[in-house]
Length: 300
Image (cartoon, rainbow, N blue to C red; front, side):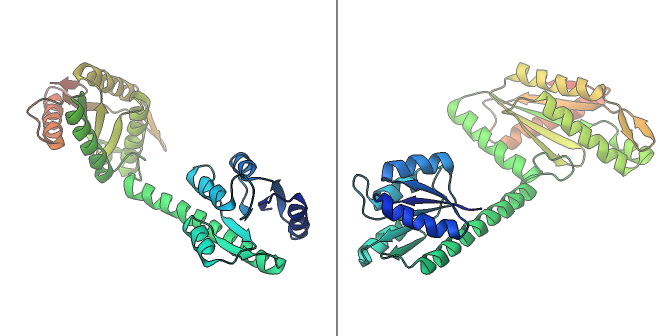
């Protein structure tokens, strides 16, 4: 049941409108001033506000402006109710973010129709935001591991690289690869290999800090961008991941197997001109770790 906040300095007017709204199935809140409107709206988050234009203290337009300035109330649709039909007032109210403008004396069926329209628009906006959030998630997330995909990881990592250079702060990169992943796929099947990658992603989430960026950048390759981490700090993160993975036993269908990872760790230095310089160096260290027997992290 939608909740409507009626704002009018005349309690009699507010109560009369409340009766009609109750008959239409709305829950009604009443505020007798602009200040009370702002406080009530922030605390109760009504679905719609009916706001009188002329009130002592904060006027309707001033109240509307404050409502749209506060994050807690900015998305609540507001219908201005006024005895004035001045074009300037209507234009100002709509420019400030009002959903509609209704003249006094209020013809309730007309007001109710405009309320339904405002509520439909709000619902459509909420549904669109849900869809947009899902599209953003699909565009930035690897579907198997739920980590950042390659494009999103690089976008965030480039920003961290620029920030680290600008503020002269440490930044480290970890490159990681599942050892003998082709053998896992060939022996146990690709579904089992996917399960191993999913477990690896969980190991990463468990081992990294909240500020670290973890991405799957291709196949069985993963990268971790570690802001404000020097070489020792990033190496400690890499070792936590390596040890956690080493302890995992993957159970899939009737299968049971283990896997290990190799990692290369490096940190920002004065010769690095771009993020890719760091990434390439970490990648070389990763392959050095593989050549030296796998299941290890090499840092430089």
